[in-house]
Length: 322
Image 1: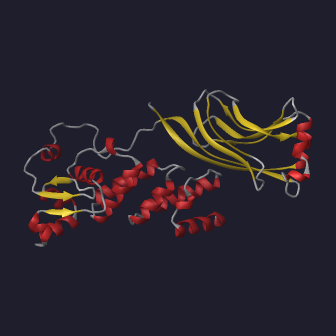
Image 2: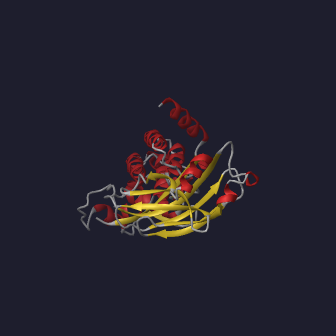
Image 3: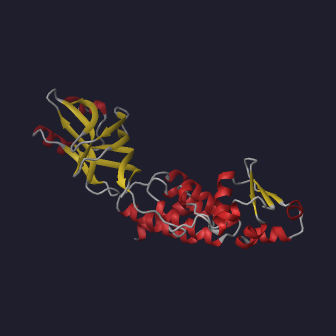
């Protein structure tokens, strides 16, 4: 099984009392908030603090791994609402119990009221970042049989020179097609071709809201050509929109399935927004359930600031009802 790099957003807030810090640090203990990295088995991470031999308070991000794993971390540790400390770094963790951080202050400075580290007897640490982790790759969804005949009808038609209709894309490139093929797959194209209007007479149409890559992949799908190797979640969102606009129902079903399999805490907000634009109720609801489970499990979701506001409000309400 192949491996792939996945990006995982993390967000953690750690509230700890002044009394607990004093007791633990006097015993030379390490304090921390540790959680499981849900997306990858056998990995724990968290914010930790300790006191070194120079009586300095050290704050850091640390990992515990059952197996050696390369984790590229782009992260920030800060104290809220104090502006006294903010540590931003990029670091590659490769070993169990490896850590990276910075000196916060001395032990005496931490408890000096003038420094405002504590609010009503508590200090609040925030960890936010993106982890890039190697994970075993699952078998991707396939939209066609993996037994592929190099002389299949769709590819034979695609490679012919007798195409009779041009699609001009947003970036002013041209995708040549057979009228019969796109008319058979799309009621919208069929009506356009049969209308007797300008597009029908000139044998061409301008599609101003999709670029060449998206149009070509969509049309190849209409020809029955495998598109697996051309897909990623970003063009998958665009293909979902294309399939909705031109009523290519099987492409829409395929993109809904593909995008849900590709969803992660890093990209699910973009996929949700795409599902809303594309009137994909099924994908939207499946993503809703997934995000609700993430929130119940305290898994941070990236991009919440771009999430459709109505969807976000419904998600927030559902958190209180579940």
